[in-house]
Image 1 (cartoon, chains in turn brown, red):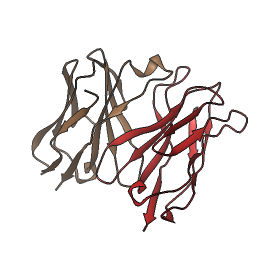
Image 2 (cartoon, helix red, strand yellow):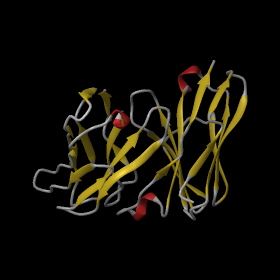
Image 3 (tube, chains in turn brown, blue):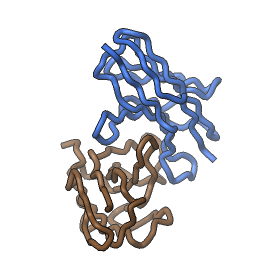
Image 4 (spheres, chains in turn purple, blue):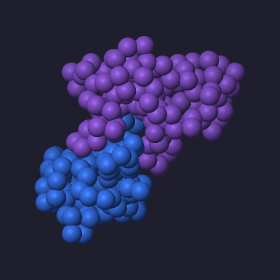
Length: 117
Length: 113
């Protein structure tokens, strides 16, 4: 299994809602990532988990709250989002974390397209 | 810091045309280099990679050669198809203490029948 899965595929939420994005991989990877991608732009790194511990937070607002319940799962909890948070949210995983460097390929999921009204 | 400069798009070609998308990088030393592809409505997929100078990565008819002299990793395909329409990202993985996968700005490719 060389797949990263994400649910839901699409999500529409109001600014007062609480929702969660889910990501799962069964490749035995020990690093997992959340990215945000706006239209016509490359992905921007939000968070990195390495061995189930948060290792990088790219100064993301607290209305985004990541969680790594186990080595296969990664969640992103959303609360009180703004319309400008509308974007494609991508999850990725890799065998080792970013600092391992070298030939450390990241596998991306299909993304969740989020619309905040 | 590490950076990637990628040819600006969008690029529109006819089917069976020759494709080149330019990519140059700035880094100390010799990192690995990647090309990712993003088809409409999907996430990113690794298209090809090269791990050392003079390596040639290839996949699905695409090729890219890691040229240390010109710090380049240009993507080429001899005969494009409509199904190649996508956004292509050149990328530099974390290297020598850097913590991020560094992407180019992306090149949107449209192939017309």
